[in-house]
Length: 108
Image: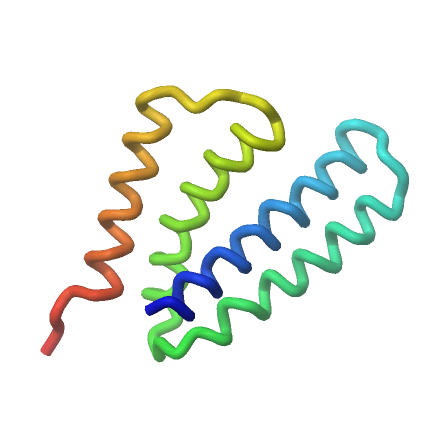
């Protein structure tokens, strides 16, 4: 379980961080190497979730989506300095409950 969560966090940071660098390059006129670095990180993001031990691609990516949402809220708060409101936190919590149900619900 710890490895699953760690891989989700690493994938989320790669996706958000890579996307953020591309955003800075295209939207805020940062140097080209921001976009190039961000693109490379996004390629790594595509590889990281495949390291999961779960055999179901759709389930892994759906569960990762909930973790991504929480990480995106935290990124906005810590990097962009946009304080999340009650509904941001509530929405992220609902997503995490969904992740838990998808990954750990008993199945036959």
